[in-house]
Length: 489
Ligand code: NAI
Ligand code: MG
Image (spheres, rainbow, N blue to C red):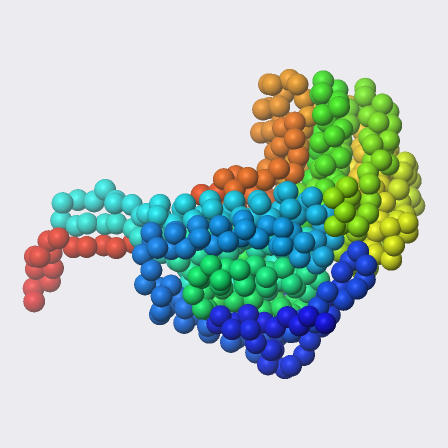
């Protein structure tokens, strides 16, 4: 059985307590590995290593060009290992091999390349000041970053934090999700091989309420970047308040996806299928509330359900598989609970609504469609985080916007129309961090991503994310040697 230690200060170490836990392959229930279980003591060691690497040593004294070159070299190393990383990620969390190999891993590496390019473009301003002084700003790294990441896209969501953090010259302590502890360790190993100095990247596996909480409340961590549930986001915010630590939260969603009757229906159906079933529905931005105009509602539901039924559910490593298992028994039970609630609430279960036992002992579910859902039902209000879509009727543009915005969340949203004016009009009215027009769930390194309302705050990706990993220092230089003469000394 393969053992996976913690990665602290460039070394592979057991946890202080000596405790371990097992990581399960969600497709087969086989044990992928035995994982060193860190807690507060290990977090403390990792933070000390990150602090030392930030203040002293090769990382702190590297020129921007050298740091940029190193990050490009790291990206190159990852490109050479895409197949390997994709397989590790798929075994860890059940994403299909096409989702990891063709989408998640390449996207993560592109993020690293994007921020490698940013290293040499970090700059402050010269302020307009009178002749007797000189005022300018410096953009400096914040210091030690704590990253707490979830299990749905471990490598990609780690990279969203790691890449801008390193580009700005910070160091980092990463706490991966307990469901998917292996892929981030493999990532760290490759980055070390590429030459990232000791202590710059540290990975401490462990549980949220122990290792995660210790990181969020550590006095020597300068910033926390979190992706995960809204409930845990609240705890992170509380923990961070102890030392007034800045945080960014990328939380849940119940994203509306609106199909107008003037849309290209074929494209809308295909895009909306991707919007909900990509990654088994375990996507924070998933288009889980599908609003369809009443004039095309029945036709759309028929066709959508027919296509949902034809999705090939199976082993994640089979290239023909379109939907793999859910990450855990716990997530599967959450889905089952919501499907029961949906039926009781009077929503119409069109297809799915059950586990998929033909695929073996893994955590397999069936693509599920609820129609005639009311926007006030629980299945339309709460995040299910599985392959379950709620199709809701709307009358006109105003009705669609009102219903779409009637949610505590605001991560993503989408609309399908061939009317250009309508597309831009509705895009402005939707309360969400991202609006997709005639597509869904797309990501780009240059495009800022994050939420409004209870989907969190802060924007990852893009030039904008650099603001979260740097801070402004203002320098005031007096040019007038007799400035204080009036003091009479
Ligand atoms: P979670 O938010 O509890 O876990 C995410 C990360 O936070 C993990 O690394 C976990 O160990 C850590 N964590 C948990 N409690 C913590 C604490 N008190 N202090 C610091 N760190 C802590 O998510 P969980 O329980 O795995 O999934 C529950 C639901 O959350 C899902 O059904 C889904 O609705 C949502 N979720 C949303 C994600 C997103 O991408 N926005 C990702 C994962 C889950
Ligand atoms: Mg949790």
